[in-house]
Length: 206
Ligand SMILES: [Ca+2]
Image 1 (tube, rainbow, N blue to C red):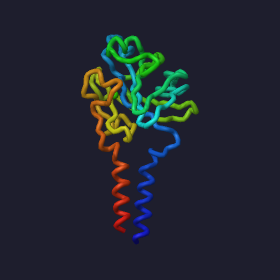
Image 2 (cartoon, rainbow, N blue to C red):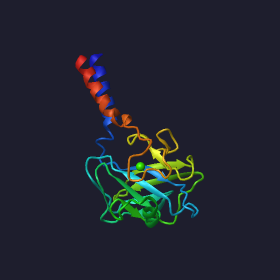
Image 3 (cartoon, rainbow, N blue to C red):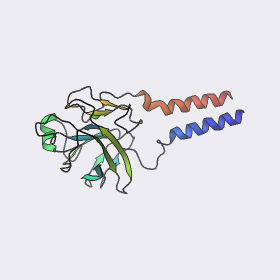
Image 4 (tube, rainbow, N blue to C red):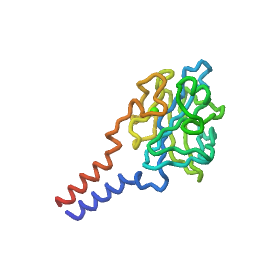
């Protein structure tokens, strides 16, 4: 019985650590501005925020942003996403800089996204692929937020289904580009570590 419980605890721990030891480093689609108030039929103001949850930088050379299967953007060879860093891929980088007053082109601001704009109706799919054509993250979203409020990811280790509970409308008009999401909850991100500690403590008792 004791051995069986230890095996079960080990399996649970290994299952929870899968994202940590994944072969492809994680990069997250963290925030989406699909319904901006840009006065231009929801076009120039559209953008995506990517986040690197790792403790090392990620080289995005030749990575791709896709929307409903269409290639929207190809990252240049100088694209680096710093550890624990944010990056914007904008429909119109000039508009983004003028509106938000932040972003350095080719550093933490990239674009322009192609002309295949993000819809405000129906359900749509946004993905990032690495230079080996592997999907690193993909988000399904539908219109659920007021105009000019982004949809933000709550727990960066949680689900990428932006129609579900791990996403919510930004608390800030205009969203939170290049910084932590307004709805971010850190607790769940540390959950695997907490569970590992609990499992180890239980194993010692057995
Ligand atoms: Ca953000």
